[in-house]
Image 1 (cartoon, helix red, strand yellow):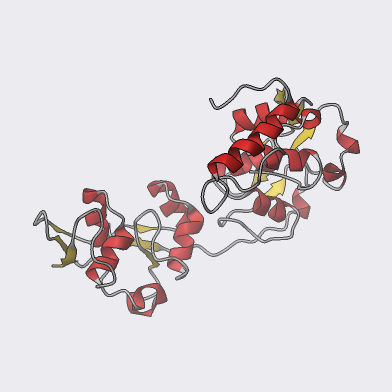
Image 2 (cartoon, rainbow, N blue to C red; image 1 turned 90 degrees about the horizontal axis):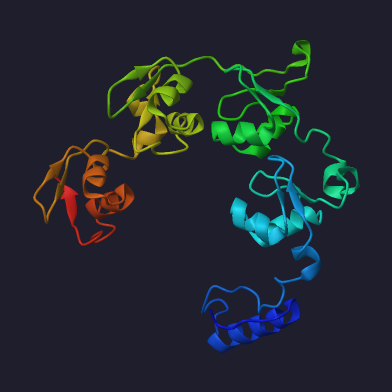
Length: 285
């Protein structure tokens, strides 16, 4: 506690003073602004409702505390400067929904969403995003036919007639996990059994990512040497030795798991691009 103030105006003034006193604006500290803009009584005291959850809050500040979203982002949504923040919609309680400009062109807010593959129906696109781990913006684009799929899944608004569904079905390709040697019928099956994001596994198989959840994957119908994500990685599954402990690990990933160090940094050390990590030195066995 630096100081107690008796009014928002005094808070603004003293905030400016202390930020200047400690010289804590970037790059010297965490503050971006000079202060004096947070405690605006008009916005700070107006009740706020979260459209998705239905919860009401006494103020923007209270909404920020309970949801973990920044004050400025919630204020921007309430004031119509942006449409959504962290997948949530907010509005001032004293302003009717139809009068807030950020919602005028969004009649699909709170429309129920159906995942075609799983058959699960969600209360909203935001709820679908929370439960599937997929971006709410991309789910919305799929429902609005602006995007084909997201994470290999098709979504539609639940009230859309079945004959109007525009589905994009990809042929199932068997997937192999390099580390475990286990084959799966499809990317989605691998994702379900390993609890790894489906899109991440797909990106690894297509060469966009190197690994997903610490594991390497490839399509079974494509030879290992023809998959570009492995062409320049001959050190996959090479045994690794920790100099300090003398322990030999089956792979970089295994070394990372057992030592608690970052696999990327261990790889850089083994390839001579880095000296050590956490005081430990590694080399290919």
